[in-house]
Length: 115
Image 1 (tube, one colour):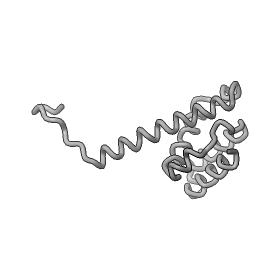
Image 2: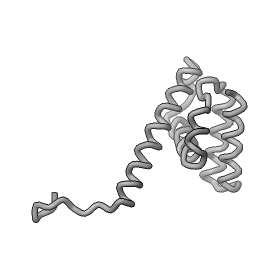
Image 3: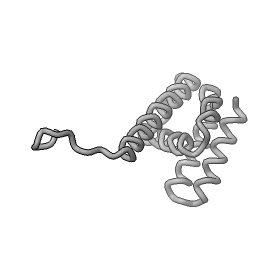
């Protein structure tokens, strides 16, 4: 509440952005958990920054593809090699070595093939 006792004005756009960010975070959390379950003990080979980078790529992918496609992705079938490839894609995105759409298409293609 603001000083005058009224709720501060929150625009529809701001609500939309917050909702988008929340849905994205929840989708990434679920996908990361599926990867973790699929890898079992191998998951522990990844460092916290690597796990953060994986989450970053998954979030960008979630924002890029249609949500019906996202629901069809089989994260639990990814191997440790696949996850290391996702980390390489994360570096490409962060360092802007390639067009981000191309990188995300590669990530998507890799996960779809696994399903």
